[in-house]
Length: 267
Picture 1 (cartoon, rainbow, N blue to C red):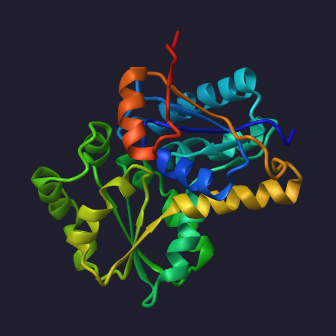
Picture 2 (picture 1 turned 120 degrees about the horizontal axis):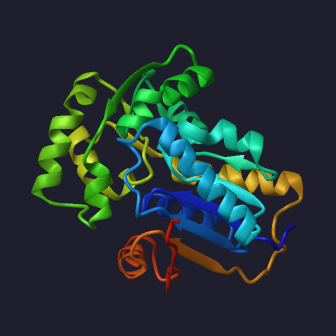
């Protein structure tokens, strides 16, 4: 069990923020990452459809790659399918919503915070429920940011167009007076410079990537599934879209560990 890899998936490149944090925190662990780039973005899709995609990918990771743990490194998929996956799969499953909510509440000074995410994530109410579970007294302002994911998936993380879009989409959050903002989509940390510039230096930006990695490590240690110290980690990356594009952009976003990407074509 300990020698088996961790499975992780996202609609595309966003989950690489979680993969990067996990690889840095758990250097002995092997990873199989699936980016469903042929079907991104998940955010505008009906949650039932996203739930179906999540089951399809999870079952493939378990069956074909014998993963010992599944990380749903996508906020929309976490909102749509996490409970079902945790119930149906024979391995532990963790998403990014609960760790992100806990981190957000821990940094606020005023008790007034914000969350931005895809249309699907915000409409699901998952973050509203998660933040309330951590602290019912927190005042939460939520905002959907359609278009952010598409910029990242094209490799555009700075520029005038992104700034103009961010100013328009973030205006309600900024005027709500929040002192902490959770980037409730794993793509959004790649836009942190622009988002931070719009929100101002008094607002703390929170990413769930590090908190999710810490949560995974804790479960691995508590269950005895952690890889032995000194294990030679092997990382595999799979894309349902163009693997050459995934390699090129993914390497820019993640680092040299993404040497190659395998392709997968849905039936």
